Length: 201
Image (cartoon, rainbow, N blue to C red; front, side, top):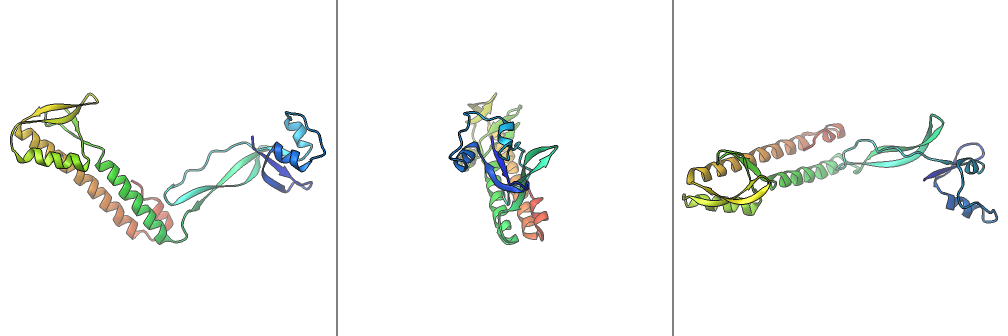
């Protein structure tokens, strides 16, 4: 439990505060092992109720705790959202790196294809993409890794099916690339912090 210590005129003396602080501030006083809120109030010490952090963009903003306030006769924790960076350009740089990381994660997360007649998931890491291109170069039937019911198995594909998997994978990557490019353009065009905050993956 976190507490707040008040001055006699009810202004804030110290926050955060604790029972250990109280004991150190009063070395000649004997305190019980456990103190009730009523006992603490005799020393102008009051419990502070926790409050959830507000919604914010973790890329460009952070939530900082500020002095609690009284809400319905209860001291309540307070937060304020502040920018992590001093300039819009610094925020743009951070947002750009965040978008690029998100795009990379999605590019490597796999894609779906119905080349086998039902939906299967295929890997899309750089190694997976190189292997997929190589498997298509032979233009021959082949066994290729695909996820079926959440498990990766080697499935027989004819040449046309492999070409369809390649096309579906290319289309999935292109969609991600287009989204990334559009968001990066929006970041570059943003003229205010509010416009930049609205850009999310």
